[in-house]
Structures are given as C-alpha cells and as structure tokens.
Image (cartoon, rainbow, N blue to C red; front, side, top):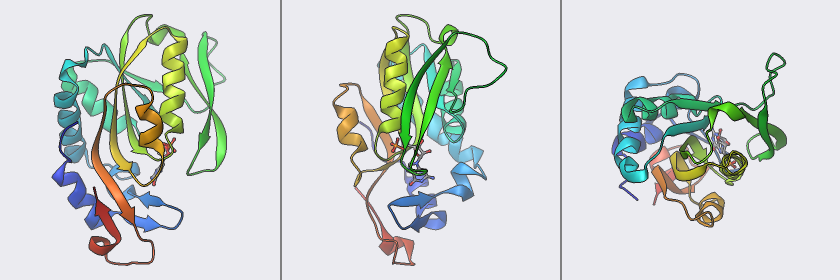
Amino acid sequence: MGEQLEALQRRILEQGRVLSGGVLRVDAFLNQRVDMRLMREVGSAFAERFEGAGAGVVLTVESSGIAPAGMTALAMGLPLVVCKKQASRITRDERLSTMVHSFTKDAEYELSVSREFIAEGERVLFIDDFLAMGEAALGVARLVGQAGAVLAGIGIVIEKSFQPGRKKLEALGVPISSLARIARMDPDECDNRKAITFM
Ligand code: 5GP
C-alpha cells in the first residue's frame, strides 16, 4: 500500500546507525532529536494512504510513536490517543491492558490505555515508529479488541522487513502501510549505502 517515502529513506541512509542484533538507531531524526518537518511529511503520507479507512482516532504507543502519530492525527483532523507502557500511579480510571514482549529491550511490559478513550465500535488507526517482531502492534490490536473497537489500519514509519512482524500482522487482515521498508542491514559495513538495502 503506497510507495516508500524518499525523504525518509534518504535520512535513514544519512543518519541511521546499524547496530548488531538487527537494531537500527534513528535518534538523530526520529527517536530523540525529532525532525518535525520530516514528521509532517510522514503525517501527510499516512493521511493520504488511510484517507478511506474511516478512522475516528489515531492510536500510538509512548514515546517514540507520538511524533509521527501526532502529525498523522493533525493531518487527518483526528484525536490522538497514546497507550502507556507503565501504569501511572495517579490514574484510577478503568484501564484496558495487555502484556507485550519488547524486541529492543528483551523484556515484558504492560501496555495500557483508559477505556474511556477508545469508544466501542470506533475505527482505530494505529501508527508506530518501527515494526520488528510485531508484538507491539499485536498488543495494540488486543487492546482495540478489548474496547470493542475496530482496527482500521496500521501505519509504520520504518519496517524491518527481514524480521517477522509484517507476516504476523498480515494475519489480522487490516491494511498495513510502511513508509520505509528495509530488506537487509549489515552491522559490519560502515557505509550505510552498502549496509542498508530497501525493498
Ligand atoms: P515489535 O513489537 O514490532 O518487535 O517492535 C516495535 C517497537 O520496538 C517499536 O515501537 C520500537 O519502539 C521498537 N523497535 C523495534 N525495532 C527497533 C529498531 O531497530 N530501532 C529502534 N529505534 N526501535 C525499535
């Protein structure tokens, strides 16, 4: 669904850092220092791709998903809802929650969201920064299911297509769109133009 975003691919080649274990660091424009102009392009691209999805809300996971998902919500004129990775001690509201295994941290965390922010029957567009093993997205799909809402689409900024996430998510039967799809990464190669291959 949709072409890859050239400006994003360029930034990955210029500023991405390939680590061992299939991890790509993009702290320079997405995860720590956030290039909001690029995020605006990301938001517009998702808004175009999911125009017909009938979404009533954009959902993401804290913290790295917030910038791309926020710009998508803005471009689509929709509210943004952020799932939490740690239960806050100050919230006493009714929460939907599920356990998720993190690929980058190799640990389990509890993903949760207030029930009041996802309405029953609502169509939800999920946006996240990375797709690796697909566990975060599957966790979100479970939360959406608990709310009695409908997952209308999944938008991923950077998909690592050499990992099994995409395959697992395809089983959900919802449209998936990734703005950059990485077919191969070589941590031993210093020149990113040789180290990173897009699909
Ligand atoms: P998954 O659940 O698909 O395995 O991983 C998704 C989450 O893990 C993303 O939300 C992202 O925060 C993190 N993640 C997975 N792979 C990478 C990576 O290569 N680089 C970075 N920076 N984050 C990643």
